[in-house]
Image 1: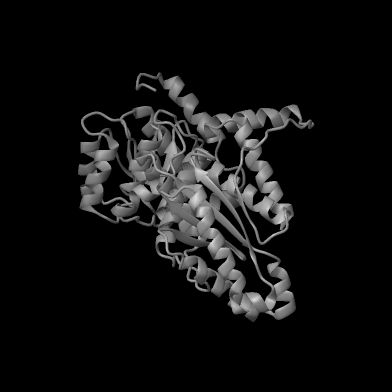
Image 2: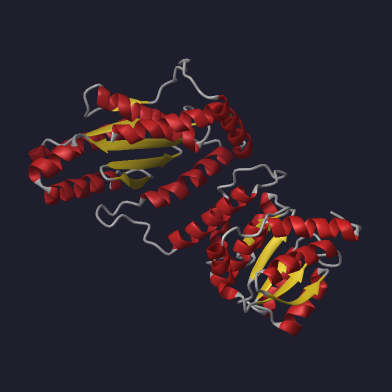
Length: 407
């Protein structure tokens, strides 16, 4: 919005913002715990600076300065040493992203809250990777703005090393020009925080020495992307221990742990380029880059036989079932490949266990069901927000339902 609003229009905006303030004193008190903070507001729109100042001052914060462009923001930061900078992106002379970098260069501990209408993912990503602790998209509600201020003042955003930034950002979901909702921005920031935390955790399962499922969640999309660029196959193997609960119940958890260790060892030592992950309690996932499905079938058949010959497995009657699917033959993305492999694994178990099944073409059938108009509208809205088809969302929901009640 331009700076040419009338005084009455500005007063109306401020009244609307005031009406959206916290409705109960307890929530307001939580925000006021940092009321001594000194805040620098940076925005080229005078009415926006006035609005933000009004919200903050009514909630006990001190506005130590204002700036209308990036150059002025840097000068004011060096002069005033504020506790927080509320920073717009699109401004004359110097944009907010450039100013953010300069402020961070001057003071690496600077706390920055980006507030901008530029809600496309590249802007949000650049803001976060350059050191902003939160991003509020305009137009905003007063309570969300205050919550962002509070979060930035009280929490320190973790830092992802530059060499891992692309690993995090590959989880991109939206087209370049898609303006993210505040909910989607919050989700993106949460993914950044979780990724940074995972970088500091052990990526190996302590019992089996296989890679952990968290590593699979990040590796698999990278592997598929590289395969797509090189026009190569990637084959995914889902492996599950047959009747593992019986092993624990009949022979004890110590024996069950030995079975897991030995099976993990067999899968790790397959003499072919691959990665082995412990997917859950009694299941493993293997990824074979640039290997076709039929060859992987033969490799896994040898592994299946070796598992049955392990002393711990032979003594307890333990076997494994296997499902196999290949990119692009069986699916064009990670969700489809995983679903196809899980479907093949299910068929292997249903047909008697201790078997291997290959993914095959799924037959889609219509099934009558009754949904409310409200449910269908919400589904349509969610599909648009996620840039996915309604059918994909329905299949994912059904997969989760089957998992939930199949355990």
